[in-house]
Image (tube, rainbow, N blue to C red; front, side, top):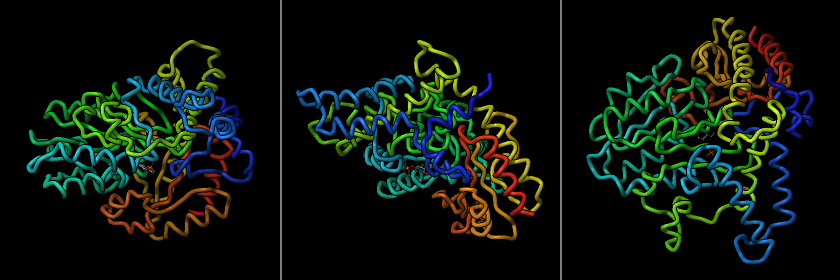
Length: 412
Ligand SMILES: Cc1ncc(COP(=O)(O)O)c(C=O)c1O
């Protein structure tokens, strides 16, 4: 079955506002699906009251929020109270660091990578510095920025308490084999495993349990939804950590890692993302009584082929130019690369190349994208960094043709 990109595009009102523009900056934040706009609109127009009181409007508001929790729990195949809605992934990891810190003691070790966005790095370094914890650095190989299992293996010891890494870097684009790395960690020590999936989730949302990790986080504003972070912690891990909520909420696991009140409308609108995926599924497969977990897996089979075509075509274009340095794998044949491509010219500034592409109607970006230490450790000025073209399933063949043609013009 072919993926109907026109149907997907018809669900994003913003795409039709900009007919002469190719949106290639999805990794910074995707467009918002109409199903999400609808929930926002309904919530803000009709239910904007304090939820969870006895009167009917308030009950409806609470139900709209609970609906999101139930749908996302089904999609992730987790228990509803293993899920935290927070304002962003950076804030979720910040809170998590406050919760993990008191469980560690001097002499314990943690592992962090330099492939990660700063939100899955700086908080752990600060936590370690405050508590006398040893940090072991899982660094990328220096050419393509790949994170290798053999490096991890040498860092694991019986003192390792946590390993923090990313499912897919927001620059490198190569998908890390999370399941394999998780198994390697389990075979060596009793460390807990936390994975940042912010760059992976726009391409597929897996079940964190099937990956064998203890914590998993992503941001819905990059997954066609509202500005919300989703944080999963398995119950066993969550129960060992210090609650960060108001003290009277201690004991309600779903509230443990949310120190403030939730953003009511945003939480309600989070379910709209799954309404969008539902519509996409129904369009391709007809009505079905499958659960969201199964529907997301079906959709991944369809959209991953389309996205592989997008990334392969851009890589084929870029590899023609000997002066172009591309991060990550240079092919998309093995199903382990998302359609995020970061490159730089060996003799020209990324800022200039990006401006030239933007002048041709290509909405791309340049810089370090908060993976500051990755770029610096590769020996590149993070201010100029890389040009990033990030495409998702709603980018069409026409978008691709225009992007490739602009790249040919600018790089020749
Ligand atoms: C890979 C990755 N991790 C984490 C983050 C931080 O997410 P948030 O903006 O929700 O804090 C980003 C944001 O760009 C990201 O790309």
